[in-house]
Amino acid sequence: NAGVTQTPKFQVLKTGQSMTLQCAQDMNHEYMSWYRQDPGMGLRLIHYSVGAGITDQGEVPNGYNVSRSTTEDFPLRLLSAAPSQTSVYFCASRTRHANTEAFFGQGTRLTVV
Amino acid sequence: DAKTTQPNSMESNEEEPVHLPCNHSTISGTDYIHWYRQLPSQGPEYVIHGLTSNVNNRMASLAIAEDRKSSTLILHRATLRDAAVYYCILRDGRGAGGTSYGKLTFGQGTILTVHP
Image (cartoon, rainbow over all chains, first blue to last red; front, side):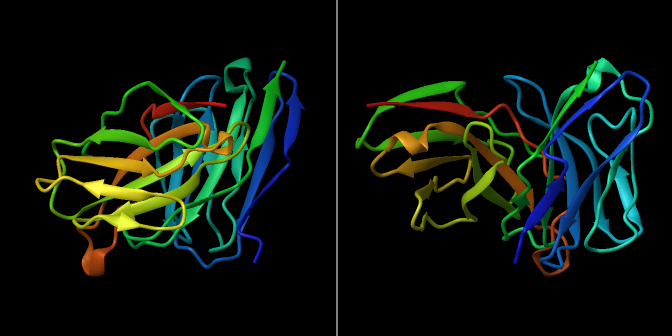
């Protein structure tokens, strides 16, 4: 049982490049989310999904796309990277029940130059 | 979503108890109170949750006020490893069978410093 796995752990992009951050969970969780965390700040919700084929925007969705074709995977796409997207990105998964815990990946540290 | 308010920072000495407060005056009857913590350079990890009654687990205790408008996370003997940012979050269980909505939002949390 690997939990929530994020890849890559580190990435450097040039402005304008695109890339996909991968997130996979093996716990059959319905809900998955992406967050970004800037230095000294809390986590801000980018996008979330309540099941395969269903996604919705969080607080800071601009510049990011997501899809959820399977229960296990929830990739985050940066279409045209900007320096403002330099951040640490966390993926999380949980069941749909309010009395269960959320599990987080170890994060992807992204630098856009 | 009901909001929570936490102090920006707190300090403790090693092996002393720590009481981390959280105010949630607009909490609804179906909101679960969850606590997470984030160690340096790591993703958040679950600590504890409760609905109405106080809760204990191997990591901490959660004391919930009778009117549920506040709660306190208690670390019984702080260690250096407990230095982290602690987040108090409400999860709405209004859905069928206690299901929650999709969003899980974080505030700024409380930075806990533990002195040797």
